[in-house]
Picture 1 (cartoon, rainbow, N blue to C red):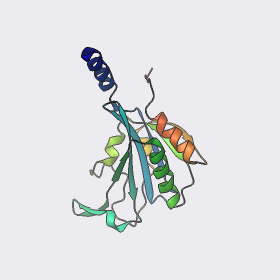
Picture 2: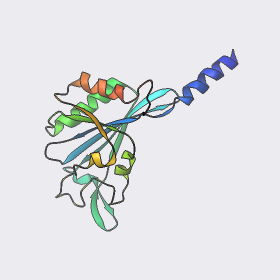
Picture 3: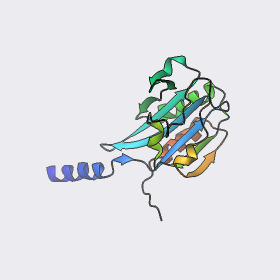
Picture 4: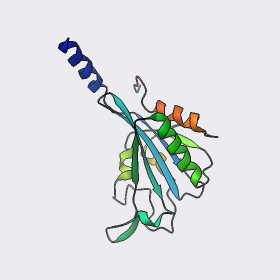
Length: 165
């Protein structure tokens, strides 16, 4: 029996790792950005949001002598809670309710503090760039978001199977 349990745990861990897609939302005024990712850890899916809010002066950090905005992160294991947070964040600043899906490849670079990768402004007076597609192929978009659409989008980040042909 222990062998069977060990085999099950081993199989779950084989499937661990990040999903192949991310969801991205930027507000109409380009002052907020939200990036959703999913990762399976010990067989449990974790939904993580990275968000940046240029309105929030508390997010300023000094980086290489310049005033910059820092990414914040929040993680959920409950997809409904994650969907609620995402929709609430988007609506806080009057987002147009559009979320785009991108391949995850290279998107981790946008969270680095190196100026050549980041989409965040050098100062709070500028907007977040439109450059998400520079990092990863955009594969889809949806509009008129509600909690169920955001939930479905989050669930799509961790498909059962995925292959590039």
